[in-house]
Length: 174
Image (cartoon, rainbow, N blue to C red):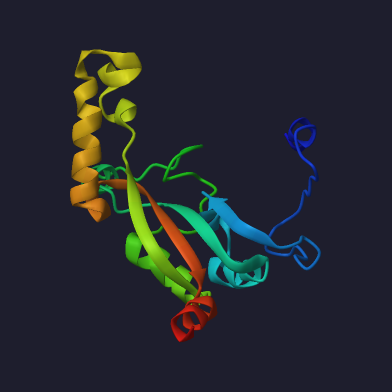
């Protein structure tokens, strides 16, 4: 897959990110870690290292799965906690996260969470008839609404926008 993707990249690095030397990767305004931290042995340690790649004023955007969403809770109550190749119970996940544990990882790494939101559970696995614009597509709007109302129960993933704590302290002193 790296060979295929390489043709679309300025630079391709194939490595274990937890052991990768980040010192020569440059500085960035934003770093997006989408569905990545749950695959790491020590996510807070990795984030501490990634902070050094931010330019002043830079932000880190994290996308993290919510293992405590209603779909997982119901299945657990029914005795089903089945790993799969994709999704929250991805067999490669080393971390199973909630909003609280996601924010704790960010804080332990030296990041301040400046906003936290959630995405709804994808509707197609719950109600297959709602795929491809079928008549029950209004469920999508309801799904977004209840996710905004109770993100810890109905959120599928959490989206955290973070910045280094030291950066926040500098902004407050100015």
